[in-house]
Length: 214
Ligand SMILES: N[C@@H](CCC(=O)N[C@@H](CS)C(=O)NCC(=O)O)C(=O)O
Image (cartoon, rainbow, N blue to C red; front, side, top):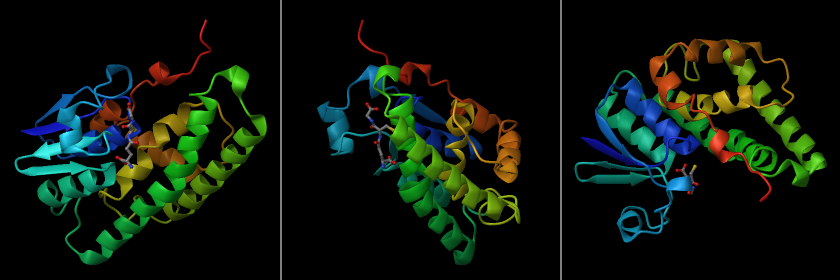
């Protein structure tokens, strides 16, 4: 059985869990990180020297880095579904995965930390405006692609969609200004009907909210 280390409120763990749910695989998830701690333990460090989640163990394979794990699961268990058989759509999936890591999530995580994981009293409003604008531009880019096709590689959900669409739940539920992105919104509406997405990605994140110490 697959073993995953990582708390359910981590967006990087959520990508992995969504892939597992999508592939209908059996798993055991162990809560570590955040309020559960444990990332400095020798057990975790032996699996991931960086002491970060998610970590996956599958028979003799130990994999860390969420995108590497999603790719591994798709290749191992999703041939013809999450893992397209042809290299060309896989290249498209990979391009968008890189973009998700270096642009979409990169900007959004900064917005999330500075808005939600920073006490309101310490908000830097100029920075928040800059990050909100950058995120709006990134989501607009995505919206243009989704105007032409249902998913990032075409007409089928693949591993390339997972890192991108995992960002939607928080992007659409935070109190922030968003541009008109009807195609992304329509995709998010469809995903809310997807059982694996609803279970593993639409996870309340209130526990992550920063408050000033009393
Ligand atoms: N690029 C890595 C980032 C890993 C990472 O930063 N994980 C965070 C959770 S999202 C972590 O371990 N944080 C420490 C904690 O949860 O206590 C990935 O995609 O897996």
